[in-house]
Length: 280
Image (cartoon, rainbow, N blue to C red; front, side, top):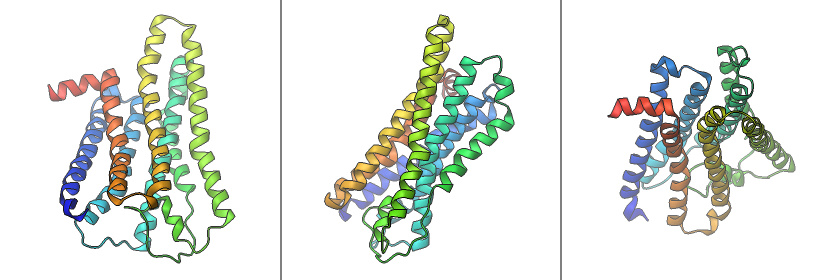
């Protein structure tokens, strides 16, 4: 595998630059253009920034390791990477649930929308999405092993603990229910409510619902697939060849962060218009 490390480095470095540029371009467009200073677009900007932070938690160290003879990381740096990786992964679900609520109020309660989705409300919802995801992580355990299976620090880190207690398992399950399962249930409930109401409304309302809700649902499916794939990778990683694990890890780290800006760039009419003006 070491023979091709430089090739892997070039590919991953290129993808990392693409992730930063594609996500940051749309964030900058939302920042610059006043007609995009609406809650829906602000939440999109937060989601795209989240992708950049998530990628930055992993890619720099992974790139350094590909060029190093020996892959070494300190315990504190490993803990930091685990914290950042899962904070920004979980906050994706929370941000998507906030966006679902925003769409519900906009489509089902249009007259009350300006009073409900104020700047203060938007700021509080975004802040809560990041703070709640960060508060669910707990890594204060004694470590006995010093060799980590995998290309970077994530949930396999718990295998380094001297003892995996029932408390740790329960705490992890509680965090999973709180920050992943409940947001997904809330999102599906909210969009079901939206589709029921829009089905009984005019064609224009249906079109508006389809244009603004479809991208969010596609991103939800993407991050759900990504999370499932990540779980499968953690399960099979110890028994798989190293090169196969690297390819699967690369898929996990590249597909979703690149998918978000493509979806919002193509499917959101206002963003798409500004992108065309920028590049055409």
